[in-house]
Length: 94
Length: 484
Image (cartoon, rainbow over all chains, first blue to last red; front, side):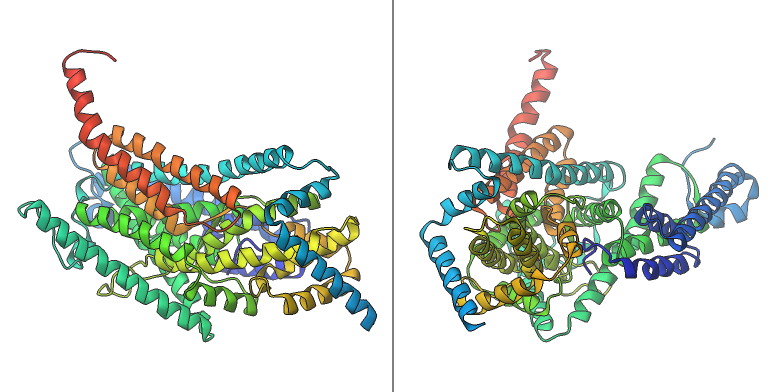
């Protein structure tokens, strides 16, 4: 419960693996926090998880930014679909 | 074996006697012995002041960041929502400007008293649950409330900020971002995570929760803050109460009390000296903070639905008290253990003992059990290797502040933020002033203290003076083109 207690060596790999698996549910940010936590570890398996977690995070971030860019610029031209997809409708004309 | 035990016991008795005679002087002398100096007085005070200032920075910065973020959120996302939030449906008395001031005051007092009564009831329930071994309920509650705050209220606040900046956003990205944020935050707070990430998420939770609370009607908020400060003071400084039971139970179990604490330092691998000294100064805060954690878990309103966020200040206070008592006992033990020993190996062992004992302290000044525990640990630790020293050095000795404190400071600032920036600035300074004063007393008195009362006192004084006196004066002065 208390996150300030440092992890023992044996537990680190299992915690890392769990975070790695959680990240596959469409949660790249969990991979990012995992990388923040396990950045300085030298265990090869942990480094594997951290490296590929970061790769996954940046890939998904890129996809998300790409999609947001498309949406923001083309929302007007999509008509109804655009409006139904929007969470926030900006006020005023452009 | 028996002779050795007797000899040790006699040593312990001597230590206790010495400790009893000169409490404060021992505190100072212990450091000196450790450093090899022999002159008491000024140098110790200097040391204490230097430790205090280092701790101050580590606590003031997150509080300042939280308050600034709350001001930002309120000025952008919540601007039109003063007195309009969901809390108002639950309050018994609906404030409206049609009623007279006295009537509003009475109604607000009723609201606040009911809230505090609810918090008290929930504290008692939680203490009972914890003591009977149902702490999985508490942990589950913390997980649920953290997840709900981060996901839903984060989503709401984020959407409102984006609406303020007049951008467009689609549901898919919003949901993905909100869920990511919520789950990553929950993981980092209740499970393992990097320290900075943990701190950031705790700050975000405080900001969100304070922004939600800021929608309470005005009179109710002020009276609630005053009553909470008084409640905090009473619960923390009183020697009896459920806190004591809670802390003792926690000690027996050896597990930390479930809740939300902000712990402000990065782990450090330092020398023994630093560890011991900081440990003493930090223990109190830790207790205080653990208590506030418990507070965080309390439900604020009895009629609210199950998904509402809980306000944990009362239980925090209660925990605080227990932890204070814990602190005193652990301090007394540490003093008695450390006192006339000059051998560095023994000191190492004692420190690791103390660290291990941190969560298993039992009672104030109990001689029998403590002596036995200390002895056993000493013997086992003689065989221990460097690893334990390192792990003890890695234990968190940082000053800790409970999230309840963050939230109520931010609540006060948010009330100022609804007015104008001058009030915000003066209240900001007032709260930080109160916090530093509390820390100073903490360093001086070496026992757990409530963090709310002083800051809230200063904050309220400054708020009313500024909004009623300073702001009209400034606007008049500007209109008359007199430049001060």
